[in-house]
Image (cartoon, rainbow, N blue to C red; front, side):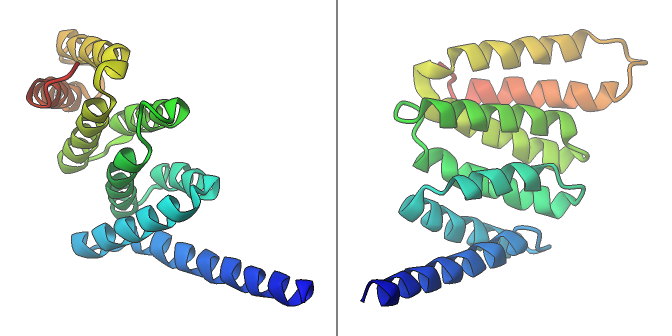
Length: 175
């Protein structure tokens, strides 16, 4: 009886693993709707299991060279921010903030930068007063980017990022 139960649990784990793999693959799809649906499916899996494997895969995928895959992961982070409440899971908050902070640096297009900054704003709003340091850090980064020499690498892209960060934090009513 125990071996039957163990086999059933193994079968459920394998099915969940295949479902997760399929959803992670869909995060790289060209269609925004497909990416958003995949993000919602992974959020539901995360809510059921709280799987650290999902978070590990998220970190790997956010470093992808494929823009569509990074956009899908950003949709997923946006979904998980509300699941992983900042006040309840302090380490999750820091992990998402560090992921998004690095994603701002890695963004390769204005559209991707706007999505990263919007997700960062969502994270800051969800954190409430716990995000005061993050807000200060992002505002300092924005000011540094605005003050940088126009000849600096990616200077115009950083200026755009600075404007987006300041706008997002102001609109989201940071702490």
